[in-house]
Amino acid sequence: MIGVPASVRILLWSEPVDGRKGFDGLAMLVRSVGEDPFSGHLYVFLCRRRHTVKLLTWQRGGLLLTSKRLDRGRFQPPTAAPGTRVVLDGVDLSLLLDGTEVAKVRRAPAWQPPSRTPAA
Image (cartoon, rainbow, N blue to C red):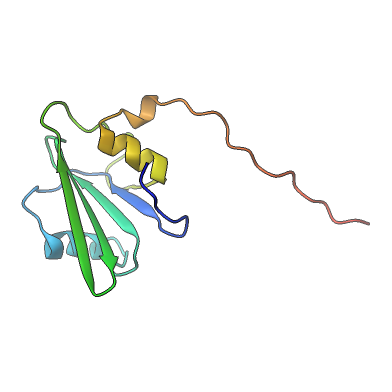
């Protein structure tokens, strides 16, 4: 599992991107939808053939670009309409990077603390 603090949003780009894009090209895509590539959030991009994934984030002093290519198979992201923002959590990202089809993973419902009603 990838340790990502809860304060860091993980946004999956819903449309495939040109695999040749680097730091500046991906940062420009992030800016084009009103996001800030220097926010420290993690932006996830897949190429058309879905065999390569790139992660873009800001770390102290500069942009960090990480990529992974599957030798066999394809990354199976959750389905989303083009142009929508897909928010992942750390577990979803780990599954995606492992090549697991995120949409088919079945999770137990997350526990929520009971709501507190003010005393009358």
